[in-house]
Length: 297
Length: 101
Image (cartoon, rainbow over all chains, first blue to last red; front, side, top):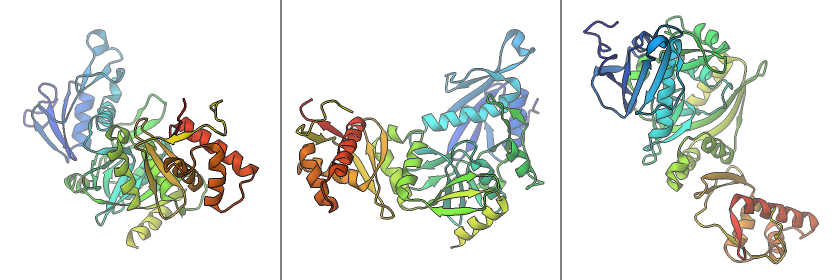
């Protein structure tokens, strides 16, 4: 358990507040797995004792025999239980999934699009892809090669400014991506490996400290790229008609239609100011060079 | 397709649609605020919708020659079939509505 002087000392009692991008997240948990997870992967974030916040996430153990036999993690998010209990060993990941649920469903100030975002020179590159297309792998590789990690999960568009708000958090990597990224950063910290409910191996990669420290610096959207990892395929970066990019972005948005016309116009305006591409690749080093060239142009 | 999609059925456009067009292609994207749905449509489909919206050609019978003129092509059977199919699509998507139903 944490020492009394640790920022996480109150995790199991009144909870702690974690500043994650624009959000103050209250976290409570009596599970060691969550404490270890926060200690290792959120060590660079501002953590303080306190109650309240934009979101309230509790990851708590079951009572009775379930506390000891096949222990479970129960996720209580803003007073609701949107998920079934998870195996206790997935408690840390459960925190991330709960936070995804919060941002996707309860952050109406922004238009939230499922995408990875990295930034360079004040310009943001949005990676929008279906699950398994290599989005997070590419995002992690870019974050380890000079790009600032904005988010692995969300492009948060401010409808009032059209700019992107960062939400730096651990990057979720699955299956072969785990070894690929492990091989690229000897100093990179990873959380515990688990197997999700779909049978995929996963780990979370600690976000680079500079991304965390610059977690309130927004950026101008500059590129929308639809990446797809294809075995043996040479790198191809092809222009994508903006109308097609807009259709993809709205399809991947969690809440644009809740904001009505304002939400749609926000995404349409973002696409208007971006150069849009499809990207197919199999050689990560090659695609990093291509995107470096894109950013330099 | 609606069984009553006859040549003389009058159509009106849905209100409050948000149409978006970019210079790098002829396609249009339309947002339907009531359903929250977004559709990617061709330039011809947008022209067809505009002919209904501005009242130039509110029936299928009028739309075929009007669309042919707008596209600078002959009002042949192929264009008639495309017009009918596109009108049916826009009806199902809620982009147009028959006035008499």
